Length: 73
Image 1 (tube, rainbow, N blue to C red):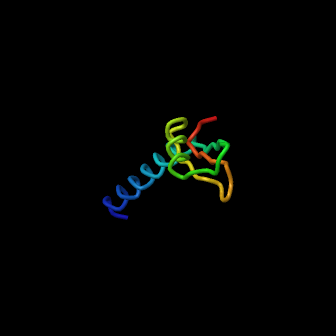
Image 2 (image 1 turned 30 degrees about the horizontal axis):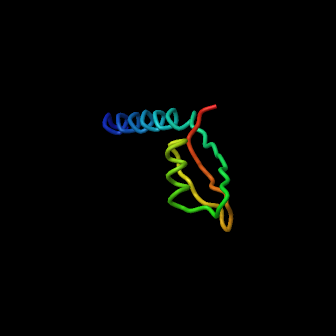
Image 3 (image 1 turned 90 degrees about the vertical axis):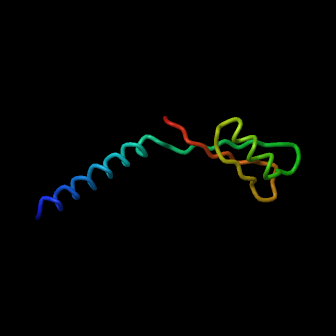
């Protein structure tokens, strides 16, 4: 292998190692929020973003809003 190939291989291994370290400790948490009326997508998304800095989606034909956010345990 030439010197350039060895250097390129080392860079790939280094970058992959850095990516694995960043994503290894992240876990996804969920929180169900229940309202009295049918869930509205905009309200659900805004509430989840404000409370957890996450993403909110309405459960089909339900009053529940499912919030998904990054957490570390």
